[in-house]
Length: 116
Figure 1 (tube, rainbow, N blue to C red):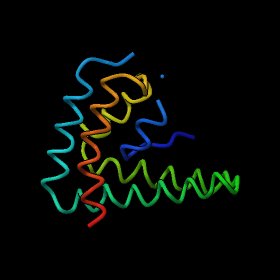
Figure 2: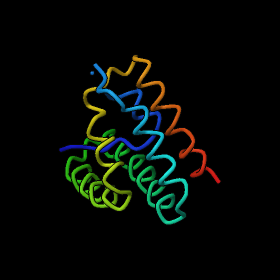
Figure 3: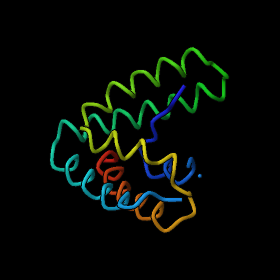
């Protein structure tokens, strides 16, 4: 099972040397998603599914986690190839690195749009 992190919190809490350009890629993703109301909605929906995954993890409901991960994977493709590529890179980034902090900061801008 693979869960796609979608928010700044998940980026900083999840990942192990940083590929070059991930922070720049994050800024591009934020610009692309932030300029499209449908993509903002999808990004926020992914965030809500992420919260449901956390709940399912507490209950140790592996089937629910798998189902939610599949939904997130499907929804992520709607955000575009740059988003999918960025999320794929996150597994290679040290969460304490400057690059991770830059990505976190960039994604916080999208997270704020979800709070509205």
